[in-house]
Amino acid sequence: MDPLISVAGVDKTFPTGRRSTVALKGASLQVLPGQVVGLLGPNGAGKTTLLKILAGISRADRGEIRLFGSPPGVGLRRRIGFLPERPEFLPHATAMELLALSLRLSGGSGGEARVAEVLEATGMARFRNTAVGRFSQGMKQRIGLAQALVHRPDLLLLDEPMTGLDPLGRRMAFSLIERFHREGGTVLFSTHHLDDIEAVCTHLVAIQQGAVSPLGEATALRAQGGFCLTAERDGERREALPRGEEELWTELERLRRDGWRPLALRSDLTRHLEGYYEEPD
Amino acid sequence: MKNPISLLTGSFLRELGRDRIVWILAAAAGSLVLASLILNEMVVGQPLKATRDAGLSLLSLLGSGGALAMVFSLGGKMVEGRALPFLLARPVRRSDYLTALAGAVWLAATLGLALLTALLIVLVRLGGQTWIAGPLLGLLLAVLETAVVTALAVFFAAALPPAPALFLTVMAWVAGHALDGALAVASQGHQRTLTTLLGVLDVALPNLELFNHRATLAQGGSVAPGTLGLAALYAGVWVFLLLRGAAAIFRRREL
Picture 1 (cartoon, rainbow over the protein chains, first blue to last red):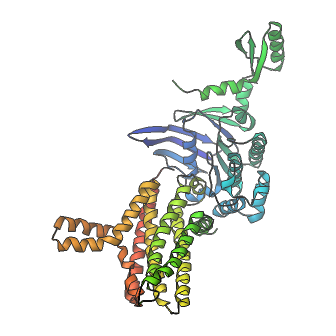
Picture 2 (picture 1 turned 120 degrees about the vertical axis):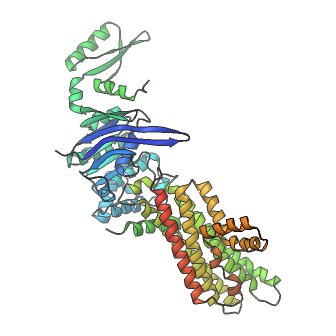
Picture 3 (picture 1 turned 45 degrees about the vertical axis):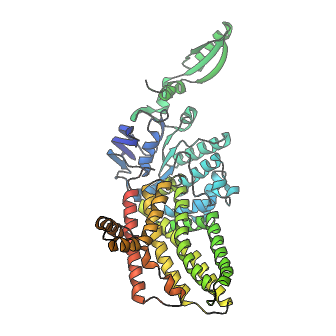
């Protein structure tokens, strides 16, 4: 199967005063159609830069990029939905006007009915006539998702889509991404929330200091790991790594017997992924 | 699919129409024209001269000033306010955005100038005089000058952050009006270096005095069609060059 996104040896440097900051260094990545790929990495790792290059907002200094099998071009952007990090829009435009503009610029079909459908799906229908400049960050994030989806793209590029969303908003975003994926769409998104990655990703990619490393299928990674149980006794903490549910119950029983108090339970995958958010030495 | 430039121009026009700054400018223009009625009492023997002079000057000043305010207000929201990425992720070229920005600002300014001209004609008519050709020619010249000043503002805003871009645009506007006079003074004083320097600036910057025929129009005179045609051609060439230059610079700008 031909990759939908193919990035090979991409470099990107930003001038910062007299120095320059390396955002991407030989970054290479392939995303196949139908995958939901989570992009992990600490702040400043290059996630936003990579997404902006793919969305056509920024240009790579060197390297090869292909989207849908072709070099990136203005025409291809109608097949892409992009949510920028902490999105901002024309402040006096209403939600309805903004989505209508997004739809028409991308040549999408359906007109007002499609706009109303997406507003409903993102929980923003009752704010359709409110100016976007009055929205909270969470509401802007919802409108950001709506404008990324309104023209029925084939590829979604989402930069921190869960930022500023309340629990209901996060659930809505998950369900939109899942639905988009079920309907055959491909997603590449960056996030700091590891449970988001566990919830929706089919594949994982880590990005550190501008270099990209594919981690593989999320299901395989989950299968490798089990749980990570944190317990406390007299101010001392320890972690246990039971491999499956049966081992987990046995471990819990043993810890309680020895006077340990269970504090937190998370999957071992999350614990494994946390390593990618540690700042490199 | 509709042309992205026309879609963006429509949205930007609507955005400008809802912006407080446009209405403040319109109110200021109307108030100044009305205030000129009081000044007429001080001009002996030439009824409504102050209103005619002030009205024609305001057309030029508010066209250029309004264009500057709108370019930096809307452009600032788009670039510094980070509203641009969501548009550029669509099938929209950066040059489309700049053209739409310039087009929307110019159209909004033209609409404001047309209303001001109508107010001027009505006021003079209420004063018992008929004066129509003068304000209409003044409007046409102000609209041409506003197009060049808008393109200048877009050019500098494409290259620089708002504060230095605004400063350079104002400097270019001042130079555009003052260079002819300064050049004449320097050449009379036989200052060769200064004359050469001013001559270079005269070529490198648009000469906005080509659009200034206020003295003639206020006296009830007219402007030859050839002069108007030349001014329109001159404005068109400068707008084209400035927007092309802005697009070339903005293509490389990190957002």
